[in-house]
Image (cartoon, rainbow, N blue to C red; front, side, top):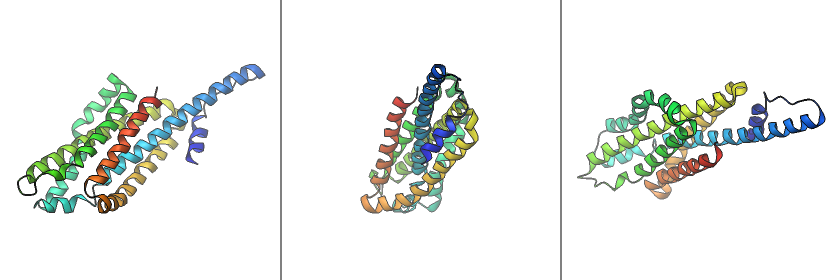
Length: 224
């Protein structure tokens, strides 16, 4: 349903020439451009959903794992805080990346960075519970920092793509993207606990990593 709404919105602003032949040519061009923009926006919404699922999937899992390593609750907070820390550290570079390598590559780097961070995170419990607690802690913080960097890249690229391609529908589409952001946070929290119970620590992270890396591949072929 939302695809038809997106398509209707992105078709706004395309003028159709009067007359049979000219009108037909311009109408076909408008329809093709509208379809392309609809596909791009659909992929952006899917990325927003997957990225925010990755952000929140750790919430029901991490506290028990940290306690299993004999670490206090404050270390759980520090690990989770690595995500916004990564965004803060790299914020000055997101605009420079857009200017130097473009929207598509910045978006792709963000999606791949988030996918890899989730993949690495899924294997953190392989550290020994007695001698590897600090390796676990440092690696977890670094993974969250990498995830924050990736999310900053894709958020910056997404905002730029919407502003550039959909100026007439920018407000509506940014609001639509926020719906998928919040839906991802909601589903990630619910899904994390269920997947952890089903397949242990590794399953929710590796599954989410696979989805993000798949979306990265789709990005390669969808965006001009």
